[in-house]
Image (cartoon, rainbow, N blue to C red; front, side, top):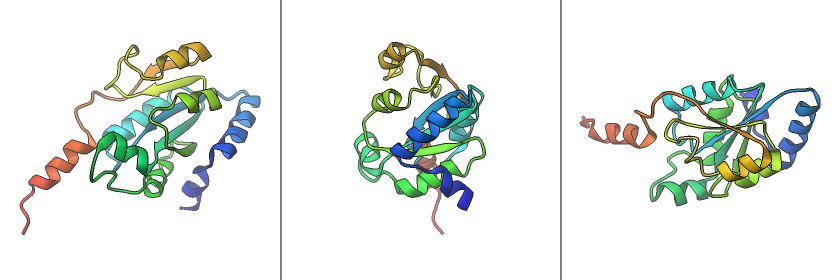
Amino acid sequence: MRAALSKIVSRDQLKELLAHEKRRGQSIVFANGCFDTLHVGHVRYLAGAKEQGDILVVGVNSDSSVRRLKGPGRPVLDENARALLVAALRVVDYVVIFSEPNVEGLLEEFRPGVHVKGTDYTPESVPERAVADRLGIRVAIVGDPKDHSTRSLFDAIRKVPHA
C-alpha cells in the first residue's frame, strides 16, 4: 500500500520528478482518465500506454471533473480511491489528480514524449491533438477495442436480481 501511495504526487512534485527522469534519458508517457471503478479495459489501456515509453504518468480526473463529464451519481469512488487503484498497478509510475476538462494544460506543463488515448479515439479525434502537435508530443492510440466501459459494468450490476 505504501508503494502505491508514494506514486500519487502533486503537480509540483511531478514536474520535479519528470525533470529528473528526463535528465536520466527516460521517455515519458502520459495517459489519463476517470477510472471510476477499474475494469479490464483500463488495465489493458494502461499496459498499452506503458509499452510506449519508460515512465508512465497517469492523470486521474478529480471528483468535480468526473461529475461534469459523466453526470449525476458519478464518480462512484472518490478521487483518492481511484488514484490509489491506478497507482497500485505495476505499469504505472506516477499518478496526478487534475480538475481541468481536458489535459492540454498538463501536456504543456509536463511535456511528455507521448500522449496516449484509448481506442474510443482516433488520432484525429484526440481533444488535445493540436497542443500535442505544437509541442512535438507523439499521440498514440492504445488498448483493446472499446467493448467494455464503467457505464456498461454499472448497467450489468443493476440488472442482477436482488435476493
